[in-house]
Length: 260
Ligand SMILES: NC(=O)c1ccc[n+]([C@@H]2O[C@H](COP(=O)([O-])OP(=O)(O)OC[C@H]3O[C@@H](n4cnc5c(N)ncnc54)[C@H](OP(=O)(O)O)[C@@H]3O)[C@@H](O)[C@H]2O)c1
Image 1 (cartoon, rainbow, N blue to C red):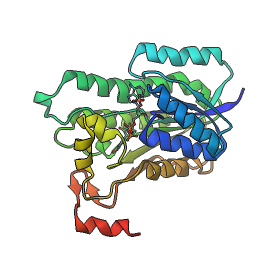
Image 2 (image 1 turned 45 degrees about the vertical axis):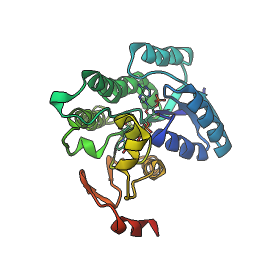
Image 3 (image 1 turned 180 degrees about the vertical axis):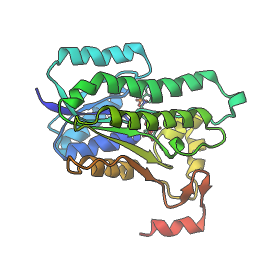
């Protein structure tokens, strides 16, 4: 059976863009997220881009039932191998202070960004070791620096960074590479999901030039296309208009980057 590249969070944003880029390399893909209609659209695009084969595997990464969908699929496809796992499924919910924040939002972030990513990786790990493959985790600059109103989201991304480091240690000698990708502001559905409306999300990127999902996908492709002895452990990518967390330049100054 063929070897596949597996992308979680493929229905939108960074995961979607990575799938399109991996398709250009004529790979076989398994694309996953909850929204099946978006996965079906992406499948068509990937096949147009040159993907050899595309399997849509919709499931909710937060739930035991969702993860059972994944294990059932693997049990039916016992010889299937994975060469690349891109763990892009993730979200932030809310910007309230801890004292005012909603526990259901915490659950969504912890169950998706931490447990969902950890369990998916664990379930696929033997198949990745079999190819000396590559695990690419979507961390964030929020996994390096904490900001007010982001305690739990930042904690989940610190956890992803720790998991990436630990995996590298536990996988030494297998040839498996682990890269932690840590973007600043990327204009995807992320802010709409976090803030609850497109209008609020648009204000986040008002009068500045954020990164695009394709910018991050290109960095991920650069990591996975290094020769096998080269492991890019971490990539920190900010837009030029964001000097650090909370350090965003807006207005005329930012416009000059748009002209290049
Ligand atoms: N955008 C940024 O500024 C930014 C910065 C740093 C890091 N990141 C990280 O990059 C990753 C991708 O984010 P993005 O910017 O591409 O956001 P996005 O456009 O909102 O995409 C998030 C993806 O995760 C999937 N997802 C969310 N909850 C899920 C669940 N319970 N089960 C399965 N899939 C789920 C979504 O699909 P469904 O809704 O269809 O399930 C979607 O495909 C995230 O881990 C995020 O934390 C983003």
